[in-house]
Length: 142
Image (cartoon, rainbow, N blue to C red; front, side, top):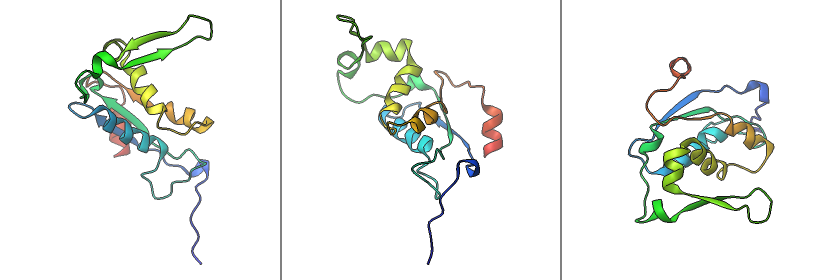
């Protein structure tokens, strides 16, 4: 009988994956990043082990958004827990001022709601332009 191989945490080999967001749809970029962070693209995927890779997203500001009025209508809310402390930012403001936070919030929603997901999210690197400091890792991984 053949058994499925279960990966141990010390056996996981992590690669570096570069995603260029220039001209791609925002949601498609995020689903690809979440898949790589989780490790579902690997043949030895184990749900209870963090077996994902590092993901570097470049040109984050150049992502394409669908919908006519999404940039003005979509809002991101935050609340401190005190009465009347609800604050909101429009998508256009988030993209302009807090690009990395926008990507992290969206990818976090696609990952499982566990301690492992917090470890996965630490391996997401988002850069607004084309330059990033991870060129040595990318060349070594490929």
